[in-house]
Picture 1 (spheres, one colour):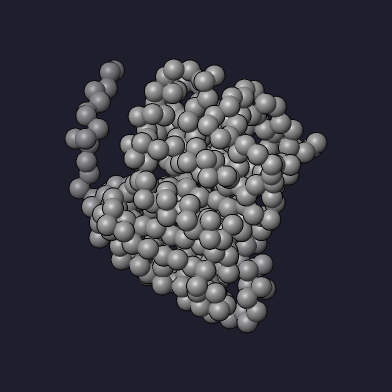
Picture 2 (cartoon, helix red, strand yellow; picture 1 turned 45 degrees about the vertical axis):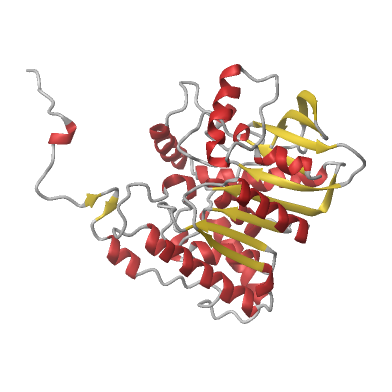
Length: 372
């Protein structure tokens, strides 16, 4: 007997438990967010002790880490070209026993060591390119990759952020995150497959977002070992998911001395609320299992205190409601103030949409010049 399948959009039941990609009891879940391990809630008196405990809780929620390479970060230079004032390399670096990672490195002309930036690419629901969003593709790349990268520059107002920083005298490192660029899937990049693959990875005991962060930490360690780099002057920055990666990396790696994040900070109560007309609330790309039961996003970012940190968010940014941004900024300022370091935390709300234009890139550069 053949069964006739109705159109999925017509197959609605009178009763349901989820809508707009959230549970109908979302407000009840939010009401129970008490964040017992936030600095202000923990009851721990010594800030250094709190940082150690809070950081370990984050690592606990990140599940199994990728096993480190047995023989260090072995690197192969795949291609090299000279640009105006700096050298560009495409490398392959072994960040784990399981895999090698493609990356771009820009090295200024002249005598080092130089300050360095781990430049972290965005999400954008666009997985075909990763590192090429941040650094102009080398001439060894396929024409389709070059064309795609040039078109993606609209969110950066036509400027490759990495090349801009390299011209200012910074070593710049940018690697593909898992599922982006040359770390994607054989069948081609599809946004809807990201969540399915992330779920499958959890069956292995692996959190895909956490492995992105672990790779960012390992990439920073590699950067610190480069002879051209002054290991005492390493910063990180990014836009959107890259901004999330930047403050997360600053919180979890002592190698990072300065961090700048453009358009990614909010509180979970606003992010996961029905108050806003949107269907994208975060998802696997920034999900560590169970972490919200302990700390909110600004509490985790506060593990980086008292490092110099810059946060820029947009008043027109529909992904990050202003109410949640302002609450997050206030939480972080209270932490930096408690350590007598509020002058090192700069939080700014600009009249911009979700973007990282020329003025934002210039502001980040000025921040790095001040603190690196």
